[in-house]
Length: 487
Ligand SMILES: CC(=O)N[C@H]1[C@@H](OP(=O)(O)OP(=O)(O)OC[C@H]2O[C@@H](n3ccc(=O)[nH]c3=O)[C@H](O)[C@@H]2O)O[C@H](CO)[C@@H](O)[C@@H]1O[C@H](C)C(=O)N[C@@H](C)C(=O)N[C@H](CCC(=O)O)C(=O)O
Ligand SMILES: Nc1ncnc2c1ncn2[C@@H]1O[C@H](COP(=O)(O)OP(=O)(O)OP(=O)(O)O)[C@@H](O)[C@H]1O
Ligand SMILES: N[C@H](CCC[C@H](N)C(=O)O)C(=O)O
Ligand SMILES: [Mg+2]
Image 1 (cartoon, rainbow, N blue to C red):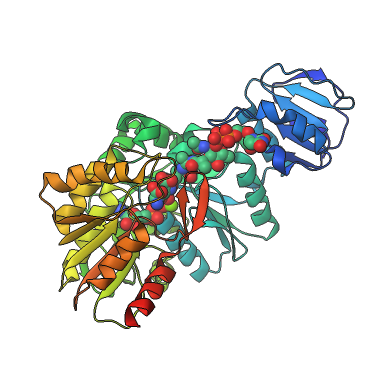
Image 2 (image 1 turned 30 degrees about the vertical axis):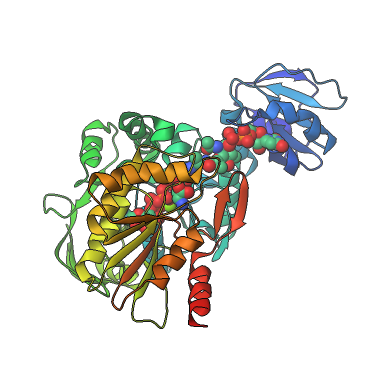
């Protein structure tokens, strides 16, 4: 594509070179630059991309986009200065990939918990309706049925546009995108035409980044001004109700919850060991649903997905079939198949509310002891740690407090933070820093009918220690330990 076609209609100043050249691709990471690329220098949290311009040029970049004055002497290089390279990345990527978000129905899902689950429920509903759908989120980018790894729940603007383009090329009709508060705050989702915004809930998390719930809430609010068709809000959530007051635009808002005052609601809820039965009520009638996902909290996720599908005009029986067709999501309340008289469940709960919801669900059918192996991520919200400890200690017979992606923090210090909460309610605990040893302790001491919950890592098959990503597949580890114990 011609450089001028990428940058026209944006604010820029040409510091050097001409605009007639062809651009073979856009990059913000010098390590990935290839011949003829435009390199956009981003000043990040760790390093400044402006320091990697030399490397980008060596690798063949012919156009450099900056927001600072950086001397560039090399010949045949065009240098463009813009007010914000982060914004330019979003704008130029959208242009380069031919504005894919205008050619696909994009549904943004935001909230502290339930985003991934809601996107997969919607995927199942669209699939029953024979609509091709894709996903961008925590589990990766699901494009044309293939799951591609991505670094973040909501990746950088360039990656999003690239994936949207691939979805358009594969004739995908809908894209469900998890929209994290970080992405809204860091302008990763600029230049994307969202048709729909879904709000699941807002509870304590990410306060390392946002500092307080107010800032966190205001980041989430931004999504509902980016949408052009309708917004869907959980009316039972305190912050959801606040959104109902705060969102001031002309598109319809559909509310959902467990109260009949909401547009879409569930009642006659019956939770059991194989799922949840409920009646789905809409302005166009009601239908019984036998959901296979466990826990009352998943009724909320189902309602979020159902509200969206309903507003798109899908009929109730399709919505019902779609919800019922989803048997599980990797690392979300996933029972590990083992031939034992106790149960092991892997779940991604890594917030106080997520833990509360999962443990309340376990309380409903647990016959033996509840043992929870959990930690908290390093270089992440510290204030949630004692609350997580207290929440688990209130439900569990034994808390096995351990590590969960310590990153650059001392894992024992993180454990101490969690134990403040555990001790506050006189919880029964052991602290075992090494997560594999912690799991082994749980398995070795398991009694008939016990439920062992491995919380926090869910689908993750790695552990992050400093900047190293080390293989750590909890399911494999469970099998491995059980094999060793049997010998
Ligand atoms: C705090 C944060 O969000 N950081 C994100 C940010 O990293 P950063 O600012 O540190 O980037 P940097 O390393 O300083 O690099 C700056 C620039 O120099 C470039 N560079 C860097 C090195 C080099 O050799 N050459 C080069 O050109 C980089 O490509 C980049 O453009 O930009 C990176 C690239 O886009 C992201 O991967 C990274 O996410 C990190 C991994 C992260 O952990 N983010 C978390 C906090 C996050 O975003 N989480 C949310 C919420 C999750 C949820 O609750 O679901 C998410 O959406 O994932
Ligand atoms: N509606 C909900 N309310 C509270 N907790 C939930 C809800 N849905 C799921 N959870 C809990 O949160 C965990 C993560 O669920 P899910 O992956 O759907 O959320 P997410 O919002 O995508 O999380 P992340 O921010 O990490 O991407 C689940 O494993 C479960 O423990
Ligand atoms: N997307 C979340 C996942 C956290 C999962 C947990 N395993 C951790 O590392 O804290 C985050 O980046 O905060
Ligand atoms: Mg997610």
